Length: 261
Image (cartoon, rainbow, N blue to C red; front, top):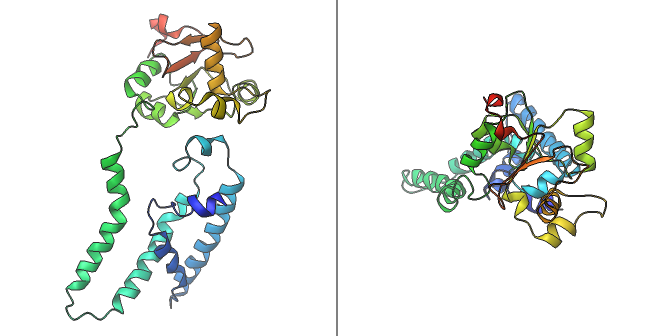
């Protein structure tokens, strides 16, 4: 239901998705275009099912822009049929002054570009307090390119720190240990305000089973007791930038300059 009511309508970041989908109703004479239209319709249906059934905690942390937004992949193809539908409709409009069509074209382009304009003007980039380039750059200097990090802002780590980074697992106990022991060792975990600046009851405790410890609860226990839980493999913490930024590592990397790149 959420996919149909929210994500599907925001697939292209604009409300023009209705016009684009109308392009599937246009009857084309070219058989190649008809096959492409059939492929597009089938792809939308399959990607919608994949996105609805494959949702994880990543979609909760970043509701719109995340790696699980599969519909964004098919959006360029949908927009092509939308443009074709628009031009078919525009050619059928008989205006007393032909130049008025250019005004209509410009108005539609302006409407489609409005969400991008508002996003660039109204929102700072990068988001203030969540992705902190200087802090990320400082943390990533302590790792080699062969090391693997995990974070709630992996794109920020990859972009500003130039280090490989994965999304946080659903919790800091079972899922993290399963990946750590079964797949690959994680050398560092970077937690930003996206995790640390959450409501205690509703987001850290209320939505999790009692035997499942979230990342926010891990940081809270560390602040309360002054030590990291013994079952967590990364036993060293750099908390100079707390309460907004926290780095958990396997050893005190910031004290050994020979290990920096």
